[in-house]
Image (cartoon, rainbow, N blue to C red; front, top):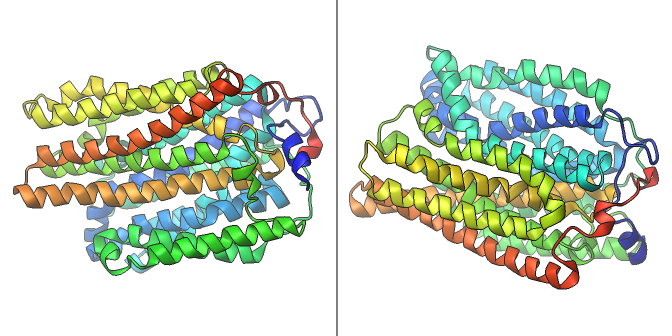
Amino acid sequence: MERDAWTDERGRGGGPTGDRPDPNRWRALWVTLVAGFMILLDVTIVAVALPSMQRGLNASAAGVQWVVSGYALAFALTLVTAGRIGDAFGRRRVFLVALAAFVVCSAAAGAAPTVALLIVARLAQGVAAGSLAPQNSALIQQLFQGAERGRAFGLFGATVGVSSAVGPVVGGLILALAHGPQGWRWIFYVNVPVGVVALLLGRRLLPRVAPRGRGHLDPVGVVLLGAGILAVMLPLVLAEAGGLRHLWWLFPAGLLVLLGFAVWERRVVGHDGEPLLDPRLLTGTRGYATGAGLAALYFVGFSGVWLVFALFFQNGLGYSPLRSGLAVTPFAVGSAVAAAVAGRLVDRLGRLLTVCGLVAVMAGLGATALVLWLAPEGMAVWLAAPALLLGGLGSGCVISPNVTMTLREVPVRVAGAAGGALQTGQRLGGAVGTAALPGLFYLVLNATHDDYRGAVALSVGAGVAVMLCALAVAVVDWRRDRSDGGGRCPPEASHSHTHASQI
């Protein structure tokens, strides 16, 4: 496809019925959001159950750590390729197959008699989750347009933010209700009835749209991208087992492989082929490169602080997993409320919304760090609640508006691959954050003879410092948008017509 054809297709969306929107689009959205919430919740919900898993399976700490890290690794490795498969062969089909596989793997994980089989089930579960995730944002691109798309992405952003924040709460609640050494199994079993209902509704409500294009998958690109992501992520997911110290050489090797991937994809485009990830997403799609970079930076701090809070509340203050999760609930509540509202404002305010959101989340988390450091121990949680609420309100104005603005001009025919690449950046950022911030937390503890309050303050402050880099990116993009057209979503993204041929 020529460059002008790429440019002409930007931002267009719609349903399978020409100019008429799909009448089931909002009900279909809720199906995808429930499934998306479930797979993202599984990134964090398992962490609180690791001690009981270790006791119940008589496993080593390193073995049960793979239950978390293996899922995250498989998830990230699958995203872009699965997004491209959905673009080429049909998003509804991939969504339903991936959701069915996730349900089966969840049941297998819950029934696993050994830690080895549990790890295998979690790896397969991660592949299923990574196959399902990019279909969510692509289906929003496909089903909605204009202001409705912003509202849909607002709900999607709320799902992303809340699922990450409430994982410890839900996990602690399940463990509190499921007594006994095998109670951890319900962490996985709970996915089965929810997934089955979502699967049945998805079969009924998701639109049947025949994919257009040649349906080629670029196997060389798949291998290069997978090898590059694996090399970059493996030292991070194995950080607690010495991965950073022993496998540091994989970072430069992975970057070289990813550079080779970029060169190969340019070659595929130059020969009029169908690349796994079209380079024009970064070079010819307004806002995509900026939004993807902002998301990756933001998730370094966003993902890392939750583990730091859990370590502080459980190890430092002796809280139970449930009480620890409840302590950060104000952030989740604020994020859910703000994300839903922000979806309605992004069309009017554009990048300014994420600038304000980043300022708020940095102020909220910064104030939380100071309160936990300086306030009396018995009052710290209560005094930190307003600051966490402010941080949550800010976060809700970052994640969902950024998704909208990053994908607003992406051609619908490559929406799956584009959404997968965006989420891969988030997963990479999350892996960096969950390795670096807890690592800093333990470093401070060792240097200060278990000063938990100083450790949490410094670690959360480091996360805020990374968010400052994301703020710088957002400000630059906002100023550029103002000079181009007032800082709002462009008219072609807000008022584009539906063309089924784009899907």
